[in-house]
Amino acid sequence: MAEVRPLEALHYNRSAISSLADVTAPPYDVVDSKLRAELLSRSPLNVVEIDLPQAPAGRDPYEHAAETLEAWVVQGVLSADRESAIWALTQDFEGPDGSRRTRRGFLARVRVREYGTGLVRPHERTQPGPKEDRLRLTEATRHNLSPIFALHPGDAWRHIEPNLGAEPWGQVADPDGTVHRVWRLADPAIHEAVAAELADAELLIADGHHRYETARTYADEIGGDGPHRYTLMCLVSLEDPGLTIFGTHRLLRDLDADARERLGFGIREHFHVEELTEGDLDPADSHGTGVFAYLDAPSGQAFRLRLKDTAAIDEALGDHSEAYRRLDPAILEELILKRTLGISDEDIAATRGLGYA
Image 1 (cartoon, helix red, strand yellow):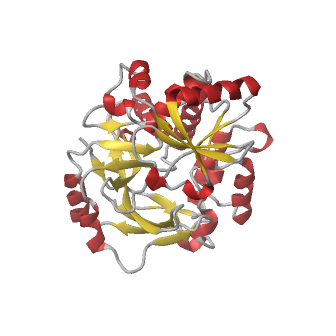
Image 2 (cartoon, one colour):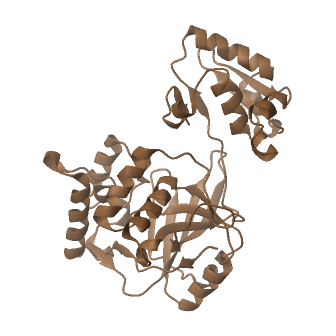
Image 3 (cartoon, helix red, strand yellow):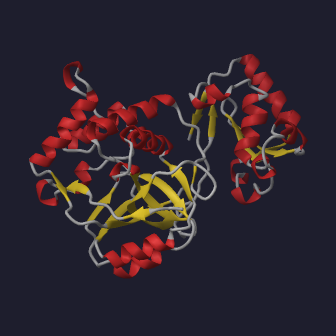
């Protein structure tokens, strides 16, 4: 069961900042040192000062985050709500195909559960470094600083949309051109309707696995029941028309002559290979099981790969379900990355020799 509740948010005081655009930031795990400096050049009050802290003179960065958070509250930069609310969110964006879409969701607190059927489902590997980082930050600040992005069945938005005012509480356009709008909804009747809609829902984490596992660890550290048993989530319906999945491309790096030879052999062993021109790279022609576009960087030549048969993947992943064995990422990872190139699970988790775009 999903226990979804409103929250008493700590948010920027609009009268204390020049604009929300100056103090917002992308998720912490995509912010490098250059971007962090750029964000703080816009405003020293940018959220990265807390969510991705760096302490001066070798001091503890997590203590620095906690002190900064407390100082901003005292100075009136941040305001704490006295009544609970959920926050409706829309995101207008342009996809790689040039089409404009709107994704709709809402921010609320959700009781932390174990992973499992009917509860919360993960889909990513997690690494100890980020979990330790997020845990230490949570212990120091005692706040959820960024939401977990989770998907739910059903249509909770139907309880929200009729109550949105013409003007949102806040609006920000990010450098990618995405326009984010949020509305604060304090009506208990809305909260109850949304909670009832999702009472029997199973949640799928789309992004934020490290933060969710951190929330579980933190809740157990504190013990007992209370607010620490909940974590901040942005919830989007699986049926939302703006929920769109685009391809994530694997980039193979640092291949020597031997690895390139093995790669070519492995591709020919498992796939039918069709040479392509740039105009042939139409996703509509890529239906079927185990169909990939492959671009050879040194030559610039593109190919379409089609899995010859499923025998090799069925043999390699016989302890997994058939549905899993038919997933393109599972086929690519097992037959090419692991069996052909010898890349291990640990290498994949640490992105050694591997990148993503």
